[in-house]
Length: 241
Image (cartoon, rainbow, N blue to C red; front, side):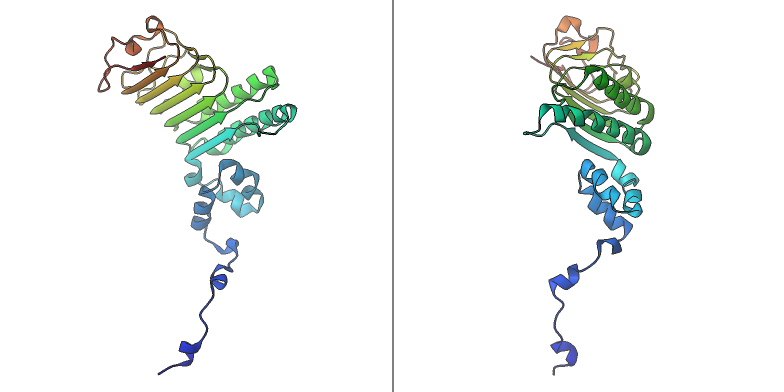
């Protein structure tokens, strides 16, 4: 026996999809925003309305951040240099103002364009390091890659909650900071060409995974990193030429 309900047309897929995204719950929108890249979120989604801008500051979205700043393959050198520094400074400002209290994991890859003014570049990096050292007290994982040289100084030593630190430099990488205060640090990977570590730059005793890649001379390494040194539960560190 058929009823009127049986003969009624079924709703189409388009009918299901004809829903204003603004009708979604905050939780659903946060999940959607989580699938976007950091730049997409804040260059586009944040400008739609106040609600979206507010949700982009949700702790769930600020626990991790990944950013790659690099010139486009066909971008003119002068234009690339002009755009890079404001973007780096904007990221440092966002880090200090919004993300810092919640940030646990940060992946940062920087390809610095030719022609970037040296003085302005140093100031931009100083702002980034200050934001990390002064505001990101809960940061547990930092993966940093830059296509030029880098120096790991007091700003790294200030990240007391770090458990994982990976740094890769396209040229000289210097470790000049005392890291003994990083008592939570378990994994340390450093790569530079060359890699230079001051002998007085003592490593935390709790490091269990250590990898040093580059021209790192054993005689110039901290005691814990020398091939003859033993470390808890990890044996000898890797010294890759």
